[in-house]
Image (cartoon, rainbow, N blue to C red; front, side, top):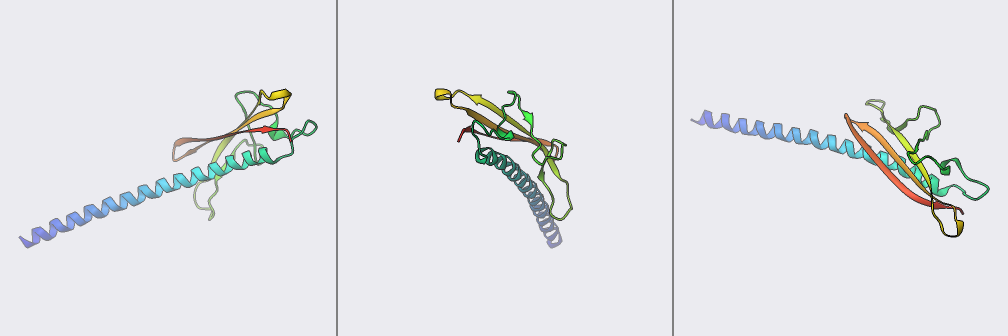
Amino acid sequence: MALVQVIVAMAMILLCGVAGVRALVEMNRKAAAMRTLNNARAVVQRNIDTALGVPFSRTAAPAVLAITPAAGVIYDEDGNGDGLVDVVTPRSGVGAVVQGTLLRTVLAEPGSEGADVRRVSFQLTYTYRAKPYTYQMSTLRAQD
């Protein structure tokens, strides 16, 4: 009888251990997805900050504030011509690079007394672990 109790106790400990390891693996996957989302947010925020920080006047209209079609245009942030932006680059060289497409949309907004007001939007679309994700931010920008 004691042997049966020991076997049942070992089985219970094994089940709890397996459940615990599975929970830890799932938490690690979700944490990695959140780190990737934070990186995507940083990429979009960096471009919004650029759009807000560049000089903008009637004589100097930077390329980042150029009017686009309503559907937007792919924005090649790093300038290498591939149309992709790195969302995650592994530090140690181990792991996959996560890349996404950054879409820039700049539309003219009606302003009072003929003011040049533009709505600037950046949308980053990427795939992580075979799931598509999108992160988008918008702001308004007027001439200096």
